Image 1 (cartoon, rainbow, N blue to C red):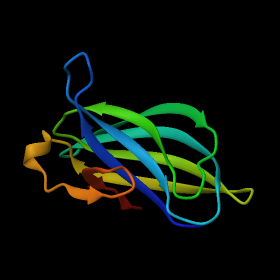
Image 2: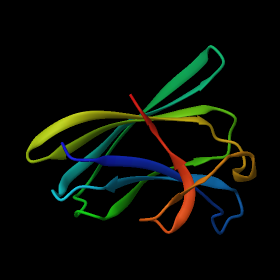
Image 3: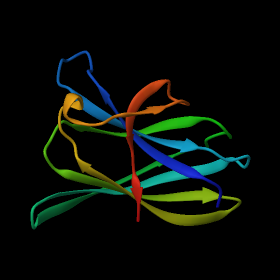
Length: 124
């Protein structure tokens, strides 16, 4: 599979509740055929939970991106379990993010393809 990047960008939706938008970025020459968001996990200390999501998205062209999830600001570590299909082969991708505080408490990095600053996932 090519280079799949998962990033979280802080946003403030119209309802005023600040949250994070999670994107899958196709940083490869081969198209991503589909992305399945299997579950979202959260953890605080030793306590954790996982919620089955099961949302299937279509393809992502090379050099493009797709928002796949939103999460409100929390002090929880957040992980996305994804099944990403490239070339007819589905591969599991686990994208982990540290605690999602208000953006001012993070060292955000530029995500050039999105044109915004955000957090890059640790892949597991």
